[in-house]
Length: 350
Ligand SMILES: [Zn+2]
Image (cartoon, rainbow, N blue to C red; front, side):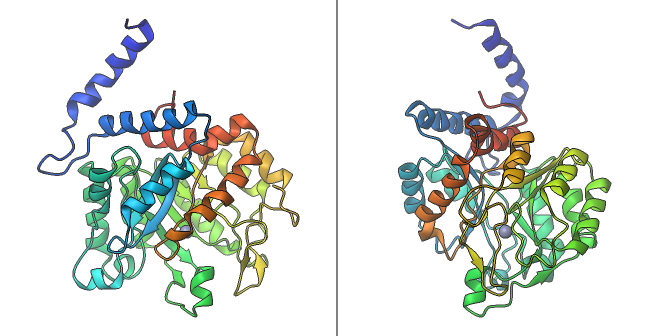
């Protein structure tokens, strides 16, 4: 029997359903309504079995080295609900002229119930050496409805701990967020109505330019990755829970993902424990916890798996679940999957 509520829901969904073609059509447009139904089924199945699914909003990989079946199997084993696994365009691909790696098409063909179609990582060389063609290709994918989310754009990025250990410095990136690339990316998000992610190391003098951009592009949906990951505390001391609280209140379309290390995680170049949400003995600091509880819709689950650490998914999952377990149950469910759901689909998960 169709209840009144259900009938209204069907009516509301009709224009959306009929306006979008099916998966696998010639121009490769994704049917978001069909996709959404598969995602919901998967999340509900995990919930019904007593598990906590989460939506990993930010992981990346090298598409040519990806073992898709292995990631999919791990997701089942670990009760990971959905994953936005974006392809980074490496130097080799870049030299061959690749400006959009449509890994999502392959992922959806194999496992349409668990991967979120996402644009490519905004990194050098593609972002910085062939900016316009790269961003044109990302924007075209968004406007053609091939993706639900743009990738992670690196505006300020220090070498990752693993790169630092390997002596690699080529990801010491600084692209001014209020420069031409920043304006194009923020504008693209407004035009496509699609969220994007930023990697933006926390430095006192970088905060004002970001605030200016958020003011100038109020309709851009920005996910600032790695909440409270401060690699050098002496550079970013003004980023506090009070500061983030003020930002969240000022900018309704600003989100944060919660991909950060555990309490013991050290950033080798500074020798500091860079995940600032933790106390030394591994508890979530009350001020950060209270902030998340006060604005749970603005915080999103994320693993931040990368091409060099996909095989560490068990460890990353354990670490992330440890964080989620420090939150009250309702907040935990909100951060784990509800926040991402409403951001991606513009409606509540139910
Ligand atoms: Zn990042």
